[in-house]
Length: 214
Picture 1 (cartoon, helix red, strand yellow):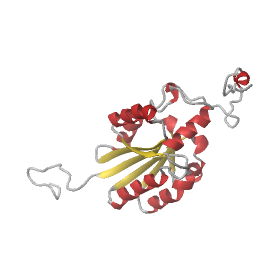
Picture 2 (cartoon, helix red, strand yellow):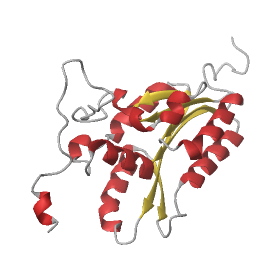
Picture 3 (spheres, one colour):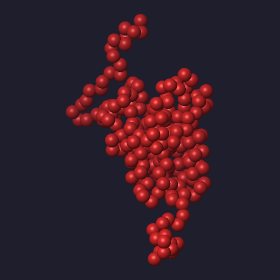
């Protein structure tokens, strides 16, 4: 019989579970996706958070607690647009930190780092997953977590996650490699990824939009 379990407690954990934490930088991920598509994403190109949640649960396994958090700004006048999305996230099992967008300085980077720091201070943080391409905000703090023994994975779009791809310690996972995260493959052909046979690069907008500018 292993130590720490009695006759009636065989197999019961003797201490708090380790934690696997996902923090999702919604403003940055939305901006990166819009830049990749060259337009506002349709439903086919919006990430499915149920797929992200299942991926996180697989990463955590049965022995660790999975915590998924989305951090977002709410611009003035956008509450009715944002509310259904926030409620859908909460129904999937994600916590949402929402902050009014009152100025250029009211982003959520510091709030994300504060939450990661709080979980790290608890001493049970096994793995941190950060969905963001913002190397200026996250590279140094995440590399320090690795130095302290916490695993770190950055998920995002390879076109906009140079800080993670260039790091010798950070692991990177392209979001499209998560099973089922998009209903349709993203149109990611670029000048850097041309196949040998060539490829069409579709217009970002209708030609008729030229008439609308008159």
